[in-house]
Length: 297
Length: 311
Image (cartoon, rainbow over all chains, first blue to last red; front, side, top):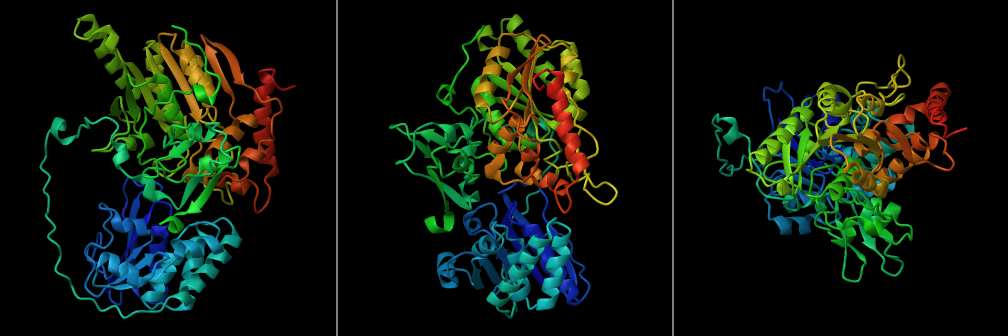
């Protein structure tokens, strides 16, 4: 049995990616489970989804803590201490990462004993769909790596997306994208060894009365500690030459991330800017440019 | 106490009372509304939050507020506000709290609570003339749970519970409730509609409302990128288009007297607002649903004719 875990951000399509993989494997004749982990997820928040693929009936239930393969749909999640996408990955397992970097660079950064595959899915999606939605490329790449055939993948993309997309055209483009991903990746032999799990302390939560068990937050305005800046695909960049200091961007930012510097020019808190790009749209001087994050790194 | 109205973006209070780093979606129109509301109200407030997307703003151990915040069940925020108001009044009366230290009590709810589940407790608070502010950020569906139809959902909208299909090609078949009129019938001293795209109008309405004791109510039509099927960068444009097409009338009612605060010189066709929103896409493709598009436009025209602002 192969166990896969997908890590993405809300809106990127982790759940649909696991469904595409699961459906494709099912069409190949395997027993399959695919499911997301539900919680209070919003667009941009870390999301997890899972898939089991097996030649025999699957008796396991619940989340996958020791996957054979992880799919990291957003490179910034690797640093996220809460998402921890690589945790529990079995020895000699596979890490598929959406990045413009090479496997060697990623391996050097994270020093993991695993087979690393990199693919710039965001670029492929932006080129072929015009949007950074990664369900099709992530599902297709995972399917290819585990050795699923082209026809089953194509049929899976069509089946899964037909229920989601209203436009026939978008469906064709997604199938094309899936097939070009299929050609860009090669299947791998995934024979993993159970790694010694990191000590995972089991916390038993006792029943406590409400004044103890419902947490009270006494700190004021500490939410900027949650660095939502890593939600961005594009960042806004100001051109001071054309900025008229009209303050439209400042008035329109939902997250209050824009302030004025000493000279009265807007400056943005990139640590927390979510990259909604409202500022880019509302700037009357067209003085804000959107720049792909990968090019900034 | 009457305050001078502000005139430009430069007059908007600079201090951010609502901090960044919230888990709200990128481009959330509700968050932009709340940011300006809190700039107008300041940090001497207690927010009583009905279960909604904004429940998630304060998740232990992080909190974007510089003011107090209390979470209640979906239907009971106005009842919670009554309790907080009474507690503050009792403390002041007993001399345990300086009246200078008094706080404004603010209910914050989504449209699910305001239009549906919390309507009876709201009606009760209005009836008792509770001295509080009430902010409804209305994205026209139960957004937090996956965009199911609410009493605020407009005619023709696709939601998770009104998917357009063979038997129900237009999506939601019921028009939006008129919450403004429901509230107005209770005769509160002040109520208004606001928009995140019109922060100057929004802040001035809070300034005017501040003169009155009793319920002061605000409804904001807020673009919701995941629910409306729109790009996060378009949220302000859409909120503005809602006003420019006449779909969202910016108005206030002072002791029952209605006045419109922003009236477009020429109304844009409603289609300009509907087109490009995923939740209305089925009205245009694969075939234009002319009858529904006409009905939506007619309902808007009818409203403005009734108020003698469209001839």
